[in-house]
Image (cartoon, rainbow, N blue to C red; front, top):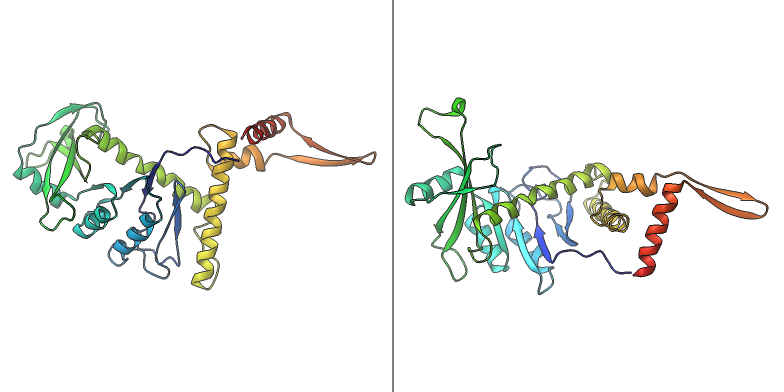
Length: 288
């Protein structure tokens, strides 16, 4: 049986790292790659050893696969940039306002109209500049910074005459790899992964760790993630695009059936819908 086709893009996400919750352990799977948070550590960008964690995560990625990292602005530090570059990872990380504002002041930005929406506005523009970091690793001392801005509503104009909302992304991908709009759209995919984090917490009860020992809780978390991956695998057998666990359970696990014994024979009674789903799964398994 062959696994469902998955795009060769491995992304590591900042699951629960910025929540400052004293979790015993946490694990997530991004396109089949496991990332683990240090057992027994406070999960916080202020305290957690993010550099070694990033190294361990991407060390597991097979050679020849694209490596991408999408994180929030808490990851916008030189040490994280250097660790990602050393791990040969392409990244997109938002910059905090106190970082991108000086860049805007130093550079004469040329703004281009875009079809992207930002702050519920359709009148948005994009631009970019270079971000010089003297101690940046790799062959270049510059990162590319992509901006998007949207005009403020009249009621939002401030006393300083600022007429726009801004957002900025630092990346080590140049314009030949991804355009300004592609950088922004690619980063926005990170939001979809929050749905899988929510799913593991709500549908696989990874909000609570029931054991009194850290290692036992880590095993509990890993079992939950294996269950999540199996449920995702089954969802691709039911639908080409897959489903979340709730719908998969409704289509397969929660469908009523009954085993009837009569005249020395056993009969499995299913609804017509359940029989159709079962036949479709069997057909796909046999074809593989």
